[in-house]
Image (tube, rainbow, N blue to C red; front, side, top):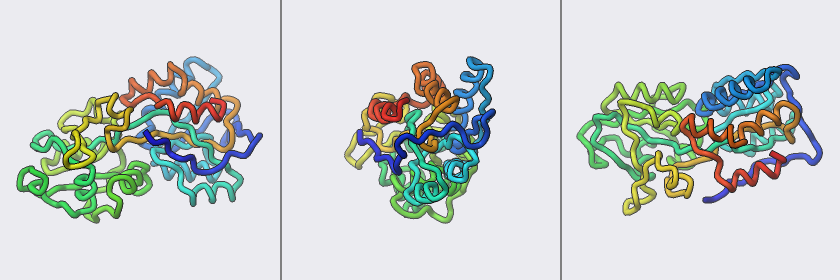
Length: 289
């Protein structure tokens, strides 16, 4: 499994105990991560009665922008921070540090009445670019493909665009606010295709989780197959991030350490995601976490 390069530098000796408020840890960002982060915060606050944590969504871009503008302590992101965002942060006195808190398999879903059970990664990309527009082109019924995806401030939107589409989305795609909205839309539309985080997929009803092949002659892999996801065989997998400024300290550090602890990682699994692969755990450790 390839380890993603950390974008940005952490200034030696710089600590960051919290931007928004000494009394309240503010966590903002990814809608893919929000349920997980809220559950982690709930358990942490139960164990630490003096701790106060607010977790809100709005998309990875919203969270990173809030960190850049010193309006949150932790930015949840389902994509890596961009070089442009790092430059903006540094110019504003914020030095982004990356922590990986979980691992995700982006899951392609279709209506449960659709006979299609698998696609290649390239076929998924071509469908979302609008190059493939009818299910019959990939072995299905003769009906148009209706696209459901995320809004442009979503980290999953950006991740799919960069790693799967490798181009622009079709203008016909329906932009949805979150994973749950995509599931509901696909359930109601026999022609639909959507993408969601694995944490929203395992208990979803009325949809089929497609198996994905790297190539036409490759092996189709189910996103619920943990071993295949962790080994890199599932071709649309990614780390889930939290970004802070500098080196975390105080209650922010304690909360992040809880998320990375065996108890915190058990919550990750209970929420339907996967524990941190060793490569990313080692990177976290380099930050003293």
